[in-house]
Every structure is written in C-alpha cells, then in structure tokens.
Length: 260
View (tube, rainbow, N blue to C red):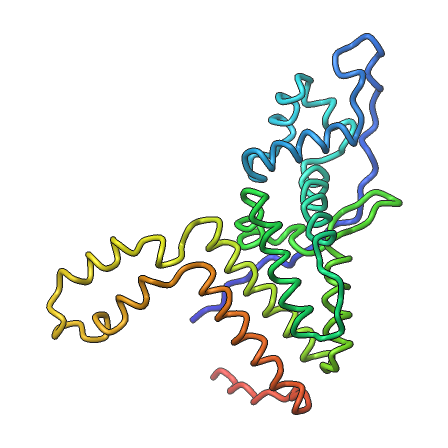
C-alpha cells in the first residue's frame, strides 16, 4: 500500500501587516481595530463554525469592506490562527491545577479539553482534517501562542511522571489522537448509542446463524454511548502508558526489507 503524503504541520512566521492607508475618521469602519476584527471572527466561529470564518464573511458581519479586514489582520491565515488561538486560550485556562499524579493530571487535561472543544463548532473537525495551525499559532509580538502553552503543559506533566523523552512524545501524540477522535465523535453524534434503533433493526433482519459475530455484538455495541467510550478509552490508554514506566524506552526498530 502506498503511503499517503501529509503536508507538514506548520505555523509560518508572522508576516508584516499589509501596507495601506488608514481609513479616514469619517468613513465606515473608522472605529475598527485588529482586536475588533478578531472578536467578530470569534463570535462567528462560536455561533456557526470555524469553517465559516473568512475575510469576506467577517467583513459582511461587521458591515465594512473586506479590504479593511485585510488591513487590520493581514491574511486569511492570520485571521484563522487568531481565532484558533482564542479557542486554545480557553482550552489552556480550563486546565485543572496540576496534582503531581500524572494519571489524574492527564485525565483532567483530556476531560477539560473535550469540554472546551464542544463549545466551538467545527474546531474538532478542523483539528482532525487540517494541518495548518492545529498545533502552534501565528501570533503578534507580545502575544501568547496558546498552542505552544498547551504543548508545554502536557510535556511538563509527562516529564515529571518519569517518562523517557521518546515515551513522553509518543504518549502526547496518542493522547491528542484520542482526544481528537472523541471530540469529532461528540461533535458528529457518532456513538453507537445515538443510532441504536437503526443498528439493532438492521442486524435483526438477518438469520443469526448466518451472522453469528454480528448477532453476538449488536446489543452491547448499540448501547455504547459517548461517556462509556471516553471512560473506557482513557483507562486503556493510561494503563498502557503506565506499563512504559516499568521498562526503558525501546528506540530500536526492525530493519525494513529493501525493495528489489
């Protein structure tokens, strides 16, 4: 199977604000500022979805020309990153106080982060499907990159727990994969329990003898809800991480067979 090439995640360096004349004091939008534009974009993202945020749409919401939005914010990427950084700031502020027990702390990170993501329509799907700005943000001088702050917070928890750097990096990555998957499932109502009637009805059309595996699974499968998924997934993941602490990191990999 051919591997799929994925664009590397990046947060490009902050670009200089576009040159241009400031609006005259008696023209529409003369009270605009970068903060005002970002607030409008954030309100749009929270009300509808981050996928609806664009220069043109924000300009329409504010009743100004798109050129003014460009003037104060820069590019569409600058605007998108500013909105994501606002969501990520909320995610950082919601983090529970560190207890020193890495399992408690990591579970607290997961649960608080999922609650925040649920309040931002489209953010979960964005993180699951896009590479740009899903980790670090493009910020102005003096601003905080809350993606980096979150990355640092989890790194500190894992380092304090005693994981080797390679183990900690993989634990971080797997934790983010788990949270992304769960948050997308929450956002799109994909837990089997959300569709119990359909699942049971469909399988019951067939003779149990012809599909014994499906008949064995269907009832308990259709009873799985989001909370059960989250609780079981967290326990399995954290139990797995705990086994790493009892053995050194293994960085060796079996050599791949050279293609002929």
